[in-house]
Image (cartoon, one colour):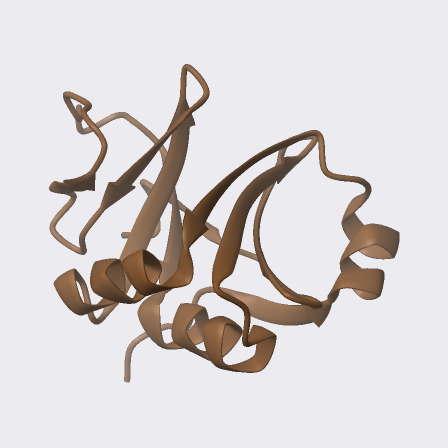
Length: 122
């Protein structure tokens, strides 16, 4: 059985637990679904110079432009949990956020937190 990375919270719980959003980029939820299709097991995210970079489970770039090094740390999330976020949130826009040092993804009133760093959890 593979590890599950990520946990869903209400927006209110996320604000209370992890603090306010300090940086945010948004993407059409249909595009997020396409990213999940491109990496159905796990998907990794990182902001680089205020741009979102997304990797598949083989650490290959599937969104954005970035020369990935083996030491670059990305936020690793299970694609199934990201899909659950889209289903529960139900909105056409998904927001990728930083809450200080914490990475989160928001759709509607649902927020995904608890990504794992890759490396080492790849």
